[in-house]
Image (cartoon, one colour):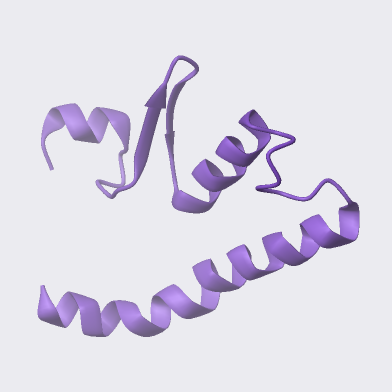
Length: 77
């Protein structure tokens, strides 16, 4: 929660990616960015249906999985 980190991510959470293009936060956005940055590497399909299936699981993780285990995690922390 340092001012320096809050300047990078106002949500005070990790991950944060810093590269030549600037600062990016939110894990799924970082994953999509890196996959697009390294297009042709097979990280993210280019076919619309295959890509949608990958992004569907990323969205499920963010909206369904994370909230369900975050209470237990925060209880441990």
